[in-house]
Every structure is written in structure tokens, then in C-alpha cells.
Length: 245
Image (cartoon, rainbow, N blue to C red):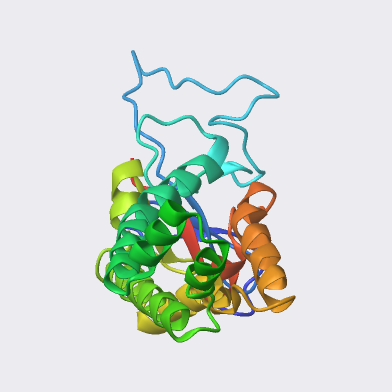
């Protein structure tokens, strides 16, 4: 198939017979086309599309849409997910992480130390409590490690088993491999997590933490201008995010 020129071909991953998928000359893309509905001709007359107009949402010479994602459909499953849905899912998935962080700060005594320092107005005690949050301290390193471990198990586990985290379920999106419609395997889900959240280990480290923060920001806004709406962690894992409804 590698020598096959770019174009529309029968979709090898389709659940519906007659669907097509675009081959870019190297791999299958996420651009898919459902088969055209069949309409019975009235009185033996077959309606032809108007001259100069495509038969279904703007077509290439072979009769398939040039931009399948622009075709208006009641069922939008499989369409590339917009940035807004991805951002909403990310914020929803952050809720359990924040709750876990608060629990860890309470268990390690950081919350009590800060409250006592604020009550007495002791600047030195407040500085000491704040220093406990640094990733370079034993407490800060433990909190950061447990948080990242939880995020790893949460993201990798859900993406491998269901293709979507709880946040993605709520907003109606899922992660799939870019070249075929299947859930990410452990390797792909692991790479996706590592690129997305791994730089968080550098938070608090002078200069490196700043660069990690910039990378994280660029990674999450990348889908705004990417043709396949992929973040950098999607490209590294060869995944895309699509709608489920």
C-alpha cells in the first residue's frame, strides 16, 4: 500500500460497508467518508446534481468531499474534536488531581504549617512552610511524584481501556490512533502521558521549570492551528482526538 498514490479508497477500518478513508501516500488519515444514502428515483427519474456544484458538501474529482469534516451531519461521531471540548475535558480531569493534592498537603503537614504561620503572622514560619512545597524538598518531591503517578495511571488506564478519561466522556470526545480506529495501546498512551505531563517534574527548578511551563502551554494550544487538531503529545503518540457525539 506504500506505493499507492494519495486519494480516497475503501476504508479498511470501517464498520459500515462502503465507507472511504483518505490515504495521504504514506498512511491512512483520520479523514473518513460515509457512503452516500441511496434514494429511490421517482417515476424512473434520477436526479443529477446541478452543474458546477458538488453532489455532497463540495467534492474532489472522484466524488468525495475535499474536506469531509465540513460536511453537515446529524451524527458527528468520528469528527476531529475542537479545542474547546479538549480544554473542557482537561479541566474536568484536573479536579481529582487538585483534590488529591489537597489531601497530600494535609497528610504531610504542609497545610497545618501554613495555617499556623498565617495565624501568628510569622514570616519565617511561612517561608519554611512554603519551602516544603518545592520539588527540591523531600515533601514537595513526594507530593509531585504521587500526583504524577496518579495522573499516569488515570490517563494511561482510561485511554487504553476506553479511549477516553472521565472528562472526555462527559464532553463527548475520545482518543484513537491516527492511522486506524482503535484505542491507544500502552506504549502510545504512555508516550502521550509522558510528553503531556512529564515536564511537570521540572516545576520549581530554576529556568528548567519555566521552560517546562512554556512547553506545556504551547502543547495545549497547538490544536488551535494544527490541520489535524493534534497537540504535540498527540503527534508524539500518533493519536488524534475525535468526537463521540
